[in-house]
Length: 207
Image 1: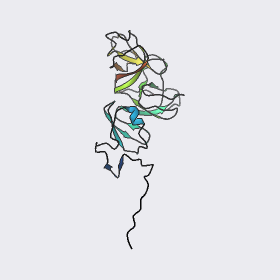
Image 2 (image 1 turned 90 degrees about the vertical axis):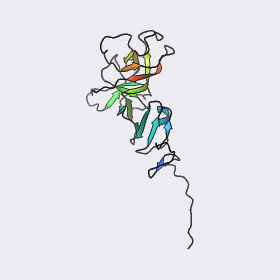
Image 3 (image 1 turned 60 degrees about the horizontal axis):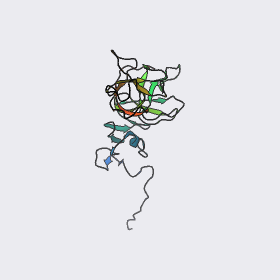
């Protein structure tokens, strides 16, 4: 009996990129290759557990854990806000009784419960990845000094009550309340928006 060959259409659940049975197709060393931004990472279709991608924006290898693309700059929590949180939003740990492992936008300036900056948009109740150290786009809503002052660059940053944003600190002695990092990108205007910041890695976290 002659061998019969069948053509099967591509499996939409597998997609056309990635790896099958451990074989890397794109020759970059990462199953999803190199992506320019975190937004691009979030847009990757149908990732599978264990897949990897290199993100040029934060210079990190991210691995898909089944819910989110994660790296050692991130901690994983649950979005406890009533709104979708976007990349760059600041989040703090929710200390409400019974609210375990949830984060919410800060409501006070210099909140010491700072958990990190949102890496990927997350709807209410969804898993959320928070960058707590490294270089990341951060929503700056207020400049304590004029935005074009010489010392605005590298100014310390801390949380504000303005819709989950951060503010720069004009000057400080010692460690300001809620110190979360430093501004690394010179602002082009006073308009609130994303600015590259160096986040200060912390060892203490409070629920």
